Image (cartoon, rainbow, N blue to C red; front, side, top):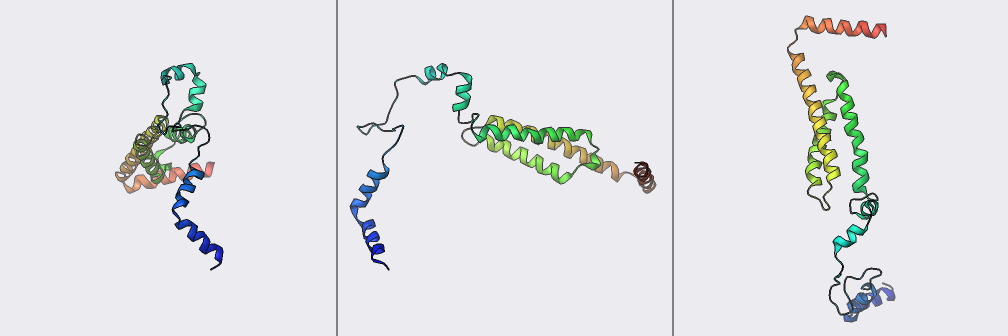
Length: 172
Protein backbone atom coordinates (compact mmCIF):
# COMPACT_ATOMS: atom_id res chain seq x y z
CA UNK A 1 0.00 0.00 0.00
CA UNK A 2 1.42 3.41 -0.88
CA UNK A 3 2.02 5.76 2.05
CA UNK A 4 -0.54 8.25 0.72
CA UNK A 5 -3.30 5.64 1.12
CA UNK A 6 -2.49 5.11 4.81
CA UNK A 7 -2.38 8.89 5.32
CA UNK A 8 -5.80 9.24 3.69
CA UNK A 9 -7.22 6.55 5.95
CA UNK A 10 -5.72 8.20 9.00
CA UNK A 11 -7.22 11.51 7.95
CA UNK A 12 -10.58 9.84 7.59
CA UNK A 13 -10.45 8.63 11.18
CA UNK A 14 -9.72 11.99 12.69
CA UNK A 15 -12.54 13.66 14.56
CA UNK A 16 -11.77 16.94 12.88
CA UNK A 17 -12.38 15.45 9.46
CA UNK A 18 -16.13 15.55 10.04
CA UNK A 19 -16.02 19.19 11.07
CA UNK A 20 -13.83 20.03 8.07
CA UNK A 21 -16.23 18.23 5.71
CA UNK A 22 -19.19 20.06 7.20
CA UNK A 23 -17.43 23.36 6.77
CA UNK A 24 -16.47 22.59 3.16
CA UNK A 25 -19.73 21.08 1.98
CA UNK A 26 -22.10 22.89 4.29
CA UNK A 27 -21.87 26.16 2.40
CA UNK A 28 -24.92 26.96 0.36
CA UNK A 29 -24.80 29.00 -2.74
CA UNK A 30 -27.97 30.88 -3.63
CA UNK A 31 -30.98 30.37 -1.36
CA UNK A 32 -30.11 29.74 2.28
CA UNK A 33 -32.50 27.55 4.22
CA UNK A 34 -31.10 28.69 7.58
CA UNK A 35 -30.22 32.21 8.62
CA UNK A 36 -27.03 33.21 10.48
CA UNK A 37 -28.59 32.44 13.87
CA UNK A 38 -29.23 28.83 12.81
CA UNK A 39 -32.99 29.23 12.59
CA UNK A 40 -35.06 28.40 9.56
CA UNK A 41 -35.70 31.16 7.05
CA UNK A 42 -39.27 32.40 7.01
CA UNK A 43 -40.59 34.90 4.56
CA UNK A 44 -42.84 37.73 5.66
CA UNK A 45 -44.36 38.13 2.19
CA UNK A 46 -47.58 36.26 1.55
CA UNK A 47 -47.15 33.56 -1.13
CA UNK A 48 -50.53 34.46 -2.62
CA UNK A 49 -49.40 38.02 -3.29
CA UNK A 50 -46.27 36.74 -5.06
CA UNK A 51 -48.33 34.30 -7.13
CA UNK A 52 -50.80 36.99 -8.18
CA UNK A 53 -47.99 39.26 -9.32
CA UNK A 54 -46.79 36.62 -11.82
CA UNK A 55 -48.31 36.22 -15.27
CA UNK A 56 -49.82 32.94 -16.43
CA UNK A 57 -46.70 32.18 -18.46
CA UNK A 58 -44.41 32.82 -15.46
CA UNK A 59 -46.52 30.52 -13.27
CA UNK A 60 -46.44 27.78 -15.93
CA UNK A 61 -42.70 28.23 -16.47
CA UNK A 62 -41.86 28.05 -12.74
CA UNK A 63 -44.38 25.34 -11.86
CA UNK A 64 -43.07 21.90 -10.79
CA UNK A 65 -45.16 20.46 -13.65
CA UNK A 66 -44.64 23.42 -15.97
CA UNK A 67 -43.49 23.95 -19.53
CA UNK A 68 -39.81 23.25 -18.90
CA UNK A 69 -40.33 19.85 -17.28
CA UNK A 70 -40.92 16.32 -18.48
CA UNK A 71 -44.14 16.37 -16.45
CA UNK A 72 -45.62 18.60 -19.14
CA UNK A 73 -44.05 17.30 -22.36
CA UNK A 74 -44.49 13.56 -21.75
CA UNK A 75 -48.31 13.79 -21.59
CA UNK A 76 -48.39 16.10 -24.58
CA UNK A 77 -46.49 13.54 -26.67
CA UNK A 78 -48.51 10.63 -25.25
CA UNK A 79 -51.70 12.09 -26.74
CA UNK A 80 -50.38 10.72 -30.06
CA UNK A 81 -51.06 7.19 -28.75
CA UNK A 82 -54.62 8.14 -27.86
CA UNK A 83 -55.19 9.69 -31.29
CA UNK A 84 -53.73 6.58 -32.96
CA UNK A 85 -56.08 4.39 -30.92
CA UNK A 86 -59.06 6.52 -31.88
CA UNK A 87 -58.07 6.34 -35.56
CA UNK A 88 -57.99 2.53 -35.25
CA UNK A 89 -61.73 2.61 -34.57
CA UNK A 90 -62.13 2.86 -38.35
CA UNK A 91 -60.15 -0.33 -38.96
CA UNK A 92 -61.86 -3.73 -39.04
CA UNK A 93 -61.59 -5.61 -35.75
CA UNK A 94 -59.90 -8.62 -37.37
CA UNK A 95 -56.94 -6.40 -38.34
CA UNK A 96 -56.34 -5.19 -34.76
CA UNK A 97 -53.77 -6.70 -32.40
CA UNK A 98 -55.25 -7.97 -29.15
CA UNK A 99 -51.81 -8.04 -27.50
CA UNK A 100 -51.01 -4.45 -28.42
CA UNK A 101 -54.39 -3.14 -27.30
CA UNK A 102 -54.23 -5.13 -24.05
CA UNK A 103 -50.82 -3.56 -23.37
CA UNK A 104 -52.17 -0.06 -24.07
CA UNK A 105 -55.14 -0.73 -21.78
CA UNK A 106 -52.93 -1.96 -18.94
CA UNK A 107 -50.50 0.92 -19.41
CA UNK A 108 -53.29 3.47 -19.37
CA UNK A 109 -55.02 2.11 -16.29
CA UNK A 110 -51.87 1.45 -14.22
CA UNK A 111 -50.27 4.81 -14.97
CA UNK A 112 -53.51 6.70 -14.33
CA UNK A 113 -53.38 5.52 -10.74
CA UNK A 114 -49.64 6.14 -10.46
CA UNK A 115 -49.98 9.75 -11.66
CA UNK A 116 -52.26 10.47 -8.73
CA UNK A 117 -49.83 8.97 -6.20
CA UNK A 118 -46.58 10.65 -7.23
CA UNK A 119 -45.56 14.08 -6.03
CA UNK A 120 -46.20 16.48 -7.65
CA UNK A 121 -49.52 15.05 -8.80
CA UNK A 122 -49.60 15.17 -12.57
CA UNK A 123 -53.22 15.56 -13.64
CA UNK A 124 -52.32 16.11 -17.29
CA UNK A 125 -50.52 12.75 -17.42
CA UNK A 126 -53.37 11.11 -15.49
CA UNK A 127 -55.88 12.41 -18.05
CA UNK A 128 -53.95 11.14 -21.06
CA UNK A 129 -53.43 7.74 -19.42
CA UNK A 130 -57.13 7.53 -18.53
CA UNK A 131 -58.13 8.14 -22.15
CA UNK A 132 -55.47 5.69 -23.33
CA UNK A 133 -57.01 3.06 -21.07
CA UNK A 134 -60.53 3.84 -22.30
CA UNK A 135 -59.50 3.60 -25.96
CA UNK A 136 -57.74 0.31 -25.19
CA UNK A 137 -60.82 -1.10 -23.45
CA UNK A 138 -63.01 -0.16 -26.42
CA UNK A 139 -60.59 -1.77 -28.89
CA UNK A 140 -60.23 -4.93 -26.78
CA UNK A 141 -64.03 -5.17 -26.59
CA UNK A 142 -64.27 -4.88 -30.39
CA UNK A 143 -61.65 -7.63 -30.83
CA UNK A 144 -63.40 -9.89 -28.31
CA UNK A 145 -66.80 -9.39 -29.96
CA UNK A 146 -65.29 -10.16 -33.39
CA UNK A 147 -63.73 -13.39 -32.06
CA UNK A 148 -67.08 -14.41 -30.55
CA UNK A 149 -68.84 -13.81 -33.87
CA UNK A 150 -66.27 -16.00 -35.64
CA UNK A 151 -66.95 -18.91 -33.31
CA UNK A 152 -70.61 -19.05 -34.38
CA UNK A 153 -69.86 -19.35 -38.12
CA UNK A 154 -70.16 -22.70 -39.86
CA UNK A 155 -67.40 -24.10 -42.08
CA UNK A 156 -69.15 -23.27 -45.41
CA UNK A 157 -69.57 -19.65 -44.28
CA UNK A 158 -65.87 -19.41 -43.44
CA UNK A 159 -64.90 -20.92 -46.82
CA UNK A 160 -67.15 -18.44 -48.62
CA UNK A 161 -65.57 -15.56 -46.69
CA UNK A 162 -62.07 -16.70 -47.67
CA UNK A 163 -63.16 -16.92 -51.33
CA UNK A 164 -64.39 -13.32 -51.18
CA UNK A 165 -61.09 -12.16 -49.69
CA UNK A 166 -59.07 -13.96 -52.39
CA UNK A 167 -61.22 -12.43 -55.17
CA UNK A 168 -60.68 -8.94 -53.71
CA UNK A 169 -56.91 -9.54 -53.42
CA UNK A 170 -56.70 -10.69 -57.07
CA UNK A 171 -58.60 -7.62 -58.28
CA UNK A 172 -56.34 -5.28 -56.36
